[in-house]
Amino acid sequence: MAPHLKLLALAATASACSNILVTPGAAADGNSMISYNADEASLIGAIAHWPAGKGLNGTTREVFSWDLGIKLGEVPNPDEVLNVMGNANEKGVIIGETTHGGLTALSNVGKTAANGTIIDYGNLIWLTLQRAHTASEAVDIMVELATTYGYASDMEGFSIADKDEVWYMELLGRGDYGEGVLYVALKIPDGYMMAHANQARITEFLPCDDPATCRCSPDVVEFAQKHGFYDGEKADFSFSGVYDPVTFEGCRFCEARVWYVFREAADFDASKYLDYAKGYDTKNRMPLWVKPKAKLTRDDVMKLMGSHYEGSWFDPAVDVGAGPEHTPYRWNGLTWDFQNATYVNERPVGTQYTGWHFIGQVRGALPPPLQAVLWFGADDHSYSPKIPIHGGANGAHESYDDADCHSRSACRREAGLPGTVTDLSLDNAWWLNNMVADQVYTRYDRAAPVVLAKRADLEAELATMLNDADAAAAEALVGDLKALVRECEAAAKAKRQAASTEALGAARYAVEASCVQPRGKLSLRVG
Image 1 (tube, one colour):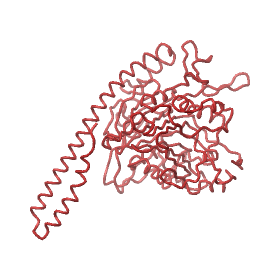
Image 2 (image 1 turned 120 degrees about the vertical axis):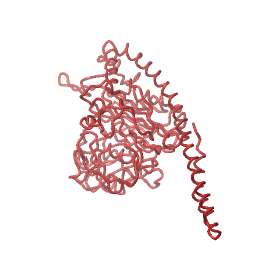
Image 3 (image 1 turned 30 degrees about the vertical axis):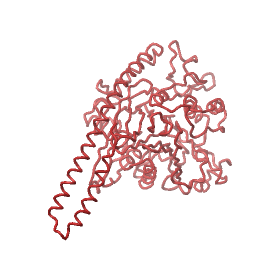
Image 4 (image 1 turned 135 degrees about the horizontal axis):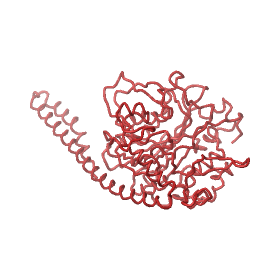
């Protein structure tokens, strides 16, 4: 790739968030997975909820910034919206993200409706989940929403899954160069896994000529050429290389997490890319996706999402800062200075400043409202218990409930929810999990095994409860469908009886047309 024509400045990120994506063919149970650590200490770990609705034409929804809490504007509602619980919906779609930052010149952070940008990355997820029936559809909806109402964030990497497909999309705004977004979305081949962690990863992707596997902005290359970000050949264009160039920090604090996930789970030559992960060789890019050594279970992914570089070159539990309890945690930031030199602390996947997290599965054998299940946890992924919650659920226990507040303290108080990020409440799961994790951090060798054992016992119990709830809910849905068929047939019978001899043929046709679809739905398998 030819050198950039401008001195590039990258938008600052807190190296926050990690995602692992698993296609159905790479999962032990055949269910696609998206896992997400929302690594932002200012967020209370709770589940947002938007109920399904119809007849909403003419109404709007307020949009508040995920990170800043300020009102960005309002977006018109479609006539019908889907139920959304956290990062999943009632149709079995799950979306996660990590912030990449990208070029400062293309950042829209802090802009609002006054600047023509209303939707930030978090609300882009939720608004899309209210509309999308599949992962493929979600890709197009995200682009349409961001283009129509303006994108108010830095560059993001989005993980998108349904029961059949897993997509990865990198998207950013155009700064003051114009309206719309720049993006590339790729379908991950079945049988593969992927990870991303605050550094853009899509390199060469052209030709992008099959929308079933690749989509991009029509001018994704020409825009960069026009504004001096790229002067090479179109065929050599690297999306991340141009719009989020790799730096030492991007390797050491971000891509190193991906390196470790691949090292542990995949057929991957970790030694070949070790200098890249260290930040010593920023040109030796890792593959975008890899095949796992063995098909992955939910427990496998959970372990990776709570990992701390155990047993690797980066393992912080064996350096001088680990102390007598061999803790992998550090409290003085990612970099620190001593005698005119700058040093780094490693940034593992599992971290103390996670606000909330989940491992999401999409179970295609179940009816749509039950397909997406988030194993949701508050605070540090490494130690917090995960509770299962369906994308089609109509509420969460108050200890995990965030209504539609997304951590805004005034909203939580007004809604009568327990606790905020500054108001301690023992009725709030995030506060309790913080207190438990704090005991582990300074007593790591002694406390971590105890907490992990208790968590495993609880989650095994919850898994059994989930199976029972899935079966009961699926049976109830089938019962509803049977009732619908009986109602349909009764109405059809009445229609036949009332029809004249001349209209009888038409009435029979109407009966067939109105009853065949509910009968088809009865073929759903339960459990």
